[in-house]
Length: 215
Image (cartoon, rainbow, N blue to C red; front, side, top):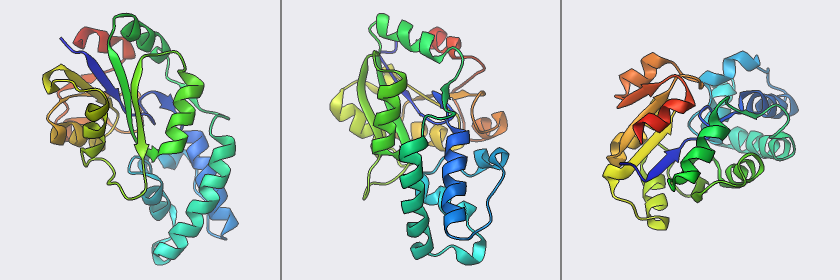
């Protein structure tokens, strides 16, 4: 029996790729760098904003100073445009509602910067049983370091055998493995089934409703 489900955000609860790509392209254009097609962004995201911006820069321009300048432009734009094209994946709102009705605790563990994570969850899923909403904070390690899971457990102590960690990437599967909790890889997100298998997902599902079968 599971009593806590921890969700990744981008590519798991919400399809954010268009708004992330537009924000990154805005930052690049403001600094005079070439932009990328939105279809290429699923391969760039997943490790936080800093890593995203490093990946989209030309190799010869990947300095800490350039990344920090891009970051300022990215956050300026994204804070104003994070909900333009972003949508919950089909079936996610219904599953979250059922989980909450069953008394299952819900949490979010994301590499997106913390303020945006809180804002998006409160905007799209304001009524669910969130015991913790955790995004990346300056000075803290990003996933797959499992610290973010441990921070959630400080807020809502739960035996590890009662936890499901749900995500769409190898980073998520590795985070769950390092935290010693069961992982669920989803196929509707930004990364491939092969990546989920390569990172030892305990379960792989094709529709949000299948989470209910794992509780």
